[in-house]
Length: 395
Image 1 (tube, rainbow, N blue to C red):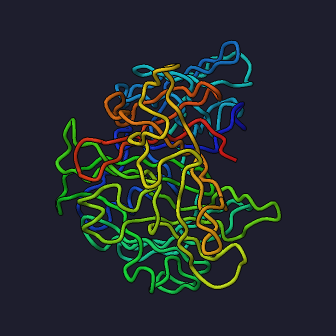
Image 2 (image 1 turned 180 degrees about the vertical axis):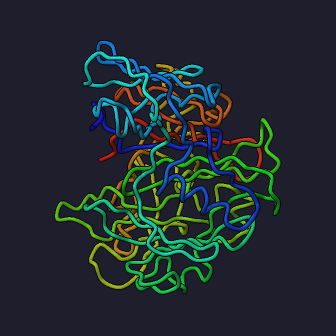
């Protein structure tokens, strides 16, 4: 039942078939997180699966104009050949058709009961309340931190990580601590408290996920800017391990993340917005390291950073990409402690005029598909873009 290719990294867009609506009402962010992290969404029936020369072609009629895009990960069930069931990564698609690689022998399956949907990241939701939720990775290698989500407000949602939790409102080892952020770390939903839908993107694996939401409401062709915020396990650099390398970032207030979409985001490579449960020593409580790029101008934004000149490069025409890291605070503000998986920072300026939200490109070195994540300090047109690997794996 295993796919021929890795399916650990999955991406989800507001525009996908059956995607939940995010808006300026209480509970809408939890609906998105439930669908992407826990349940999956967009269940449809397939009418035929044809296998030829290692490629499975799936035909469907419901939502034919919204086929799953390349590198989407689907959960298929009900096929006669078990090798066709389970998670599969889409290689190409068109109206009413998508394809994926398979080890199944050549065949045609016209049977009834074949279904597919967008596969979830596989996280758990151990606790819930009215417009409140707690999420946790189920990966055996996870650091095991909990994410508490308070979605009782309308236009933004408050987050806080915990080392352990025993109920929806009971936990120990908070990050950020109450002293660091009385109301937690904020993520945006909408700049209007109404039911008008807003744009969102979630990308993740079994241990970390990224959210880029554009709060502009109503949606328009130009007001697509958001900010990329994160919860989950980083790539620890300490060879002996780092059990507290779990990141939660977010804006300083409800109004800030709505009016300044990249407030508290990783796109700006800044400080004061990022929290880990403990220092690398394992002692004490929540620490607030800086996030930096291995190649960047301090406090600049991805795609609006002139460290390596303009895009396209006037030497080779390339888009330059680099990794982000969290510093070893409070010991050092410069020494890297852990790397942010999947995300690509652009240490070049003038990037915004060349890309659009949800556009993709193929990374030259790795051959992986990268998804464009726009950001801005205002709920309007992007001033820059970061990119995230939607092919994987990240670890």
